[in-house]
Image: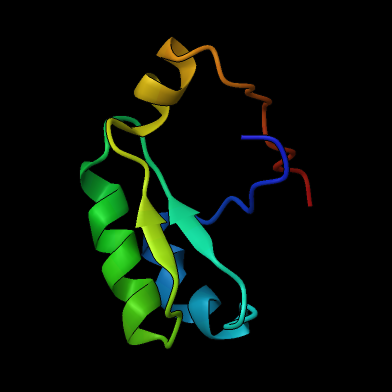
Length: 74
């Protein structure tokens, strides 16, 4: 998703405290299952506005919404 922050689920507990808690976040994965776990982690970290993308990135793509490959060289 253009402009998205890519965080692996296993890294999320240590990365969540670094996020701006005043911003809304949406979580997604391939089909939507891991996104629910990610949303729970964010909520426990204090993020109050979290949405789960229903159907995951597969549904996003099927809807014709924009996609881009994340830069993982950082």
